[in-house]
Length: 321
Ligand code: PBG
Image (cartoon, rainbow, N blue to C red; front, side, top):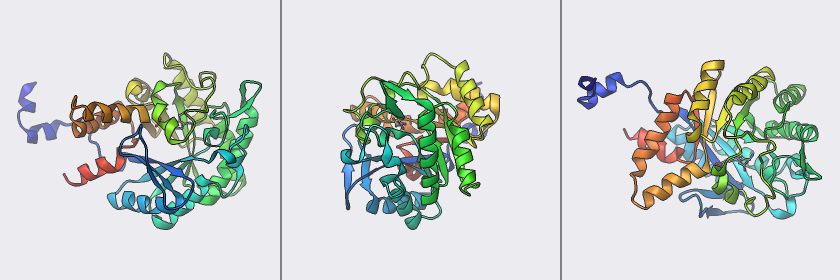
């Protein structure tokens, strides 16, 4: 076995999977105000940008060859309520951000998300009634939000809130409004995970969230169930399925890829990013090496594309090779 590993040239010849800039999706955080670039403590190297500053970032990403940006936002407290009504404001921060990105970098794909956590006072992804996240009312609400996001110019509408029946409702609403060509991405296997911690600081829900999301996100112990979730999303018309978080769930990516042969994305989430940053800043590991290794392993597991906060950094490394 070792003969094929002797030199870099023969390792290159037998290499089975390759990470490329084409595999990267860059998640970005918007914030209110103008001329704001706010570094995030729990995500070293990641900042929140006001809508007027996000175009410049999109332009940088486009010039690096990154195919798509996924937007999230830290919405001001006075715009949030228990029902996430702000999601239905055509000029909310997400939609303003989409327009700014499209103006500055028309060739980069914009992926928005319909989950209500950005808009609610309780930080849950859906509408809360008597301590319960209500499914059907949330689905109606997010299907309307999806149409507004498409109207603002989003190319792909993603759904990360794990309600039942959402992908079909979003697809129908988009079609009815004339957005047959707008894609949908289902966070099919989204787990109730501790690895989302830093994201919740970034979008301002860390202090808000009461209880947890276990009644609607998946149990980390399950994988058969991920197949069922993906099957439903595919039957309801999703163009892409996703697994989230990433590194602890590579087996789930492989199962879904093998089972459905669908475009299958993965999300290297905030806690995974923070872990690598923390470990390498303490000198316990080499940052560039583990970043490239972790992302290459997503490819090996069958991911077609990867959401990662490392996207610009990795694109620079890969472009210089
Ligand atoms: C919520 C949402 C979460 C992330 C993206 N959208 C997590 C949560 O449920 O709180 C996590 C992203 C990350 O951790 O990087 N719909």
